[in-house]
Length: 490
Image 1 (cartoon, rainbow, N blue to C red):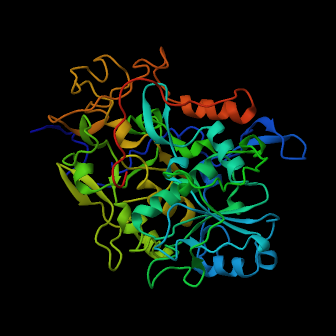
Image 2 (image 1 turned 180 degrees about the vertical axis):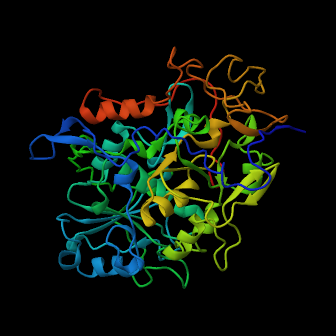
């Protein structure tokens, strides 16, 4: 049994006027530039101090070629990656002076586990554990799992894998591709881009490398990798094969792309009309409408004004993104040929198509799911293929739905009744309260940022401080309590 609370937000005669919650106030830090956007300096290896440039979502976004084969960063195809592997020295993109480093987020089937490296030719392949891609972190109010890694963790990653992002070309790839694996590939891209790797040095491989008969790297896969760190973590552990030779820190990268992460307070600002953005829910109908619960959470539902389009619509069976024209049609609110869904809004408890012209129009997109894994697909479509200013609500619904004055299974209220960060209000959410087992959540400060009660930027503040050398660490997870297990799909 559950209790459903639903705000009446959509006019019965049409959706156009209220679909986006577009306010006159722009989303802070999301404009097109023009203001002085430098703060502090970084020093590249062997270089001179360089001003840090704080990029906006519009500056971070990139537009794919209509034919993905023509891309040399962003979203690349097997055709491009094969050409690079054939002769990296001759065929590498202009401006790349280092190696080609392939970061696989999973392995292919036996005998075809890895994209074949060519160390003598400057091509390296690593199989990266999922634990490298996220960490538990506190936004000031609550500790949330599966967030972007902090600066110390990122520097360890660059060091362990011997990566120089100022010279090397980094390709996040899948062994066996699927929509689920494409999520992890997106997290690989996201953490590198967030910490300042420029778009010219970063790509995602479109589709699984080694899917039987349909892999995009057939003929270029085999049983050998430069290093599979996963085997080092086994029982008994395999010999340590990581180079651990990196000498470049994220403090050497002059781009500050932390605006890629939208915070809980950013989403509240959109919902309450202080900022404008399209909130894109990448989950399924049941989770969006408040009838599908995850992670023994306190409730289900969505922020007021969010639109739904499932992540599975973005890719095919082996994780290849659909063609650019089809993806653009989705963003226009259309139902493309062969599609099973289109952008929908919540009208009286039903997910109803918004119709052509009533989905994305302009401005910024904030996309999310349960833990912002599925949203890596929707965010790649918006920000890497279509060039739309895009941010990721990294805390996602596992965080949003936890901000509730409700008792957990131990009889403790998750948030006190007067916490300003409660989102279990009709002004902020459409939701259904759970009457099942509710796991506790880690609450670090239910009144964080008093007396303003306006921002939950502890992670971003810590990362900016690390970037400039003001601190030596990041905002790791808090102590006590339990975090929910990672769900299938995120």
